[in-house]
Length: 240
Length: 222
Image 1 (cartoon, chains in turn red, cyan):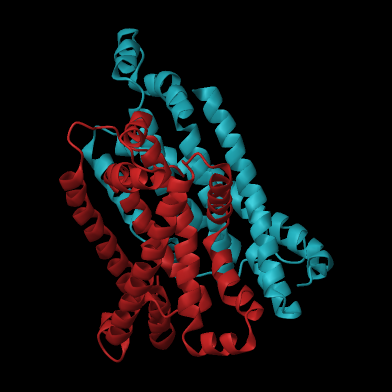
Image 2 (cartoon, chains in turn cyan, blue; image 1 turned 90 degrees about the vertical axis):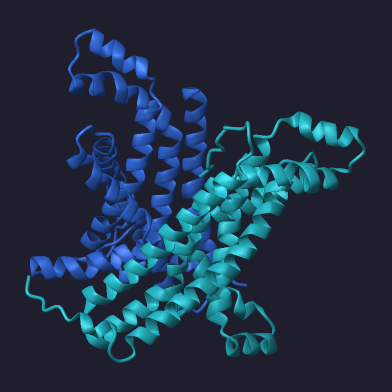
């Protein structure tokens, strides 16, 4: 192997600044997409368990279509496919306000929302049906039963698979580089382009991802222990 | 909206992009199928290594799994893309780069499935096999793995679907799969909405039929 290492490229010039910017963009993109994904996931996951067929079907269509198509295709769809359908003025506004970031956010959030939905559904289904029946018997509406009884228990049950899925979202945010969102992988490539030092640049990017993922996993393991429901050892399986 | 663009480019998208027959070396299926087979094969090795009683085998396997589950696939693809030509001192076609990256990356995930599958077989089976006089290798090959495979089927198919979708990332390094074919057509026709919705439906038909098979297998295994 004929390669001269020059690790100093990582802290000379603009590299450090680029890596930091990339990390911040990755975190911002992932955090916003995560909020969207959790909102969509809870809504559609809960709807898939209710007794109203039209709502259940709508949620099923959303989940089955969005989670079975590659994220990359959704990135291109939201970035290239959707804006031309918008009115001219809106289009100009969107392209002047970081369209690639918002398209990436939508792609990540909607795609992972469908995946989180499956996690939440399996959490809800692992709660005995009698809990719901008891809630209705004491006079709660369906909405109240979900909000006050079913969801709080389900959310505590699904901490491990939900953590897993959230880490997938964080890692998948790297796909946004294809629509030129300047996140961590994009900046790693940029350092490589400017310095021609591929191994150093990739090592830096890889280590940042590893540290990020491992620390989140460690924190969440604590959260899991803290919020585990005493007496329940049933593990909720991650569905897909 | 004008879907005639799909009809005009149907051959290129499906025959070249999805299947891989045409002027370019490409094809989603041509990449996904060997990647699934080889990734699962390496996954069995990794999964069994993680269960090994010898620490020198177990620890590297655990590190392998933890490492690849902690980094994005895009990163791994770039690693292989830059490193292999450096190591071998010769240019590697995109197909080789993509296949290597997928096999190495997915083996970590398949390995976890294999490990969980083996651990789901009850301890009494090992004891019974040992009592019958089978060696450790024979116990694994004839008693544990056949039962473990049955338990693994649902999560295996799920992982295959994930891998199938992940092959779209090979387009980043220029491999002409379905996604890249769509980009090529779109550069000429500028009909992004129609084209990307169409390939979304094609991907969906492939993955959804895989998940229907999975559900059927699950019911039979139960």
